[in-house]
Image (cartoon, rainbow, N blue to C red; front, side, top):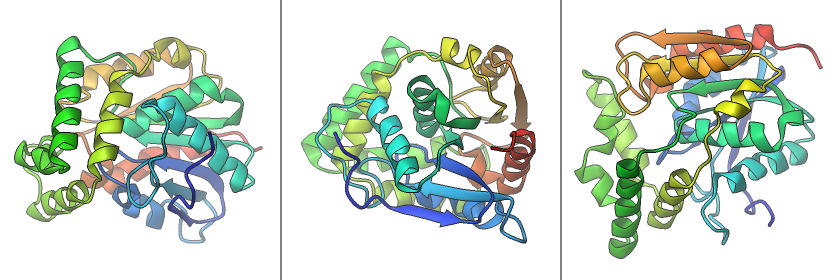
Length: 265
């Protein structure tokens, strides 16, 4: 299996390579503030890389069976294409699941790990059934309108989000391809538990979570931070699941702290 052709990859900066993997069902656009600001004034603090994942943005979905391992291997192939041996890899929500799959499959490619608003435990049976319901409906209708009708954007944000931010997230959701939404839902439902992988990490890690995140609650973040040998936990007050969008400066500060802990190559 090869990486989907011509994936969208946005880059900025020249410091430590930092790959950021977006949430479901959004795209790399969600990390615009990180892409712009994390490299620092001189552009040398981080080389920020924000790819679109399979089927999202303008990245091709391909023909593989739904599996987050496929996306993790895409990340490894992306590093090869960019001639990067090891990188800090991080993700938010689904991007966090992919990050943990990457840590399982390619531990030698890691310099650090960032897990934001995600969890290492499995879905409940009810959650898995809901993922399959969504996958079946969007495919049958060839539309992601269900996600908008069920207020997926609002459910990922804090209790009092700015209207402009709600509109931005709804716009990203509306652009998602039904086939990619179904594929990703089924891949997430089939993911492996990752607590054992996290316990075996030998690189610094940052765990970030919105205080009001109801999809990946603070307790899940605390569990990951306790399991990882070298982890720092940041709980961002008054924000929900999409903490990098709702509180970009606080989110970026946690990432900068992680980068300072990363050993030189």
